[in-house]
Image 1 (cartoon, one colour):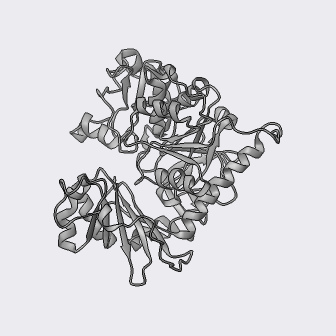
Image 2: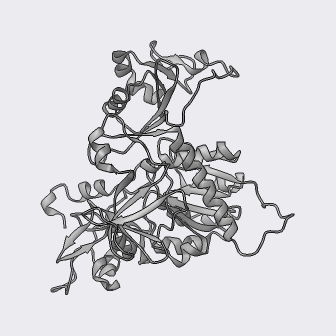
Image 3: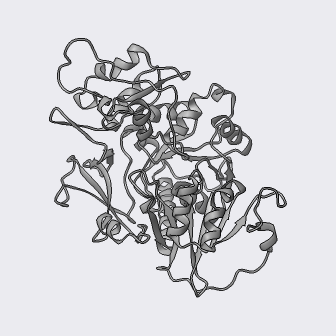
Length: 467
């Protein structure tokens, strides 16, 4: 993780988090774009940014560096410049002062710095706490006054801190509530299972592919995961098959999912426990801090059951994008955040996220949503993981790492629903086509999400060959 800290003339500043997997060019972009004055980074990131920081006059502080090994002379060691136990300076902070800049992934262009004031970060943390209390209040039967949890609340950090999930609901929630936090260096399902057993982790928060990795580990049942009360996901929809398997295979642990974004400080609708099992395709409902609407192309709310763009409003939203007024005006309209996600609300207030607006495919006069395609793919017992990609056939990987085979490839057609067919709508002509391509491995982001754009590029270098 590279921590970009920019301080203004009166001593207040904000923290910017850059992507630890970024190249030298990308790191240079973020350092210059944020106006950073101090960079904290490990030796690997220091090596990538020293030239840029020297050119811009940015102070570099290296963490986890052994003596001066591998650290250029222009870089100072954390141990040499920070005196532990020194009282923090008293600085007046207004709720509307900028607190963080979290850079988005930049999948559609240059990364954007999402700026949150202190108010937004605190409101998101309070909202997560509010949801927790509501879930406790909804639990069946009053808890015994003398009852105490079998294990103290313990979170495991399985996603990077530069990701909003790792930074806000995991790390900062642990600080705010005094929970134990178990930190992983990088994602590894086997190591995660070891830590869950040895540290008696009670809450797992990751992306759905990580929950899938845990269950699919050949040693899953060798580890004691009975301490887990919640196995939560976010960042992408979870296929209903995964929801069912989590509920069945983690003992007392219940499945959960949250639908948040960098722009909402990770807070949004949530679904868990019995609600999630009964509504496995839904991202859940919101608590009163946030408003949610589904809107048509004219920006008007639509009735329950009708698809449109999902929009959020609440005190947890970012104030805008750093130095990007046009992008801010396009995304935040009259206090409402346009998510770019397509979905619908049902009569009970459950939100269903079906696709990114840019990924929805119109074929044969019907909309095809990647979430439906992926749900069909995951139902096949031979499929380990998969993804639907706009302009390309869906990709599926068989358990054990090989391709899917004819039966796995044909399964989405056999499932029957027209909207879930990966490459054809209406009656199929002639033999069933080879709709599902089979990568040898699924490209993933640093947070564990399947990179659909990379699937498309690797399988179909020539855009004319896709779909």
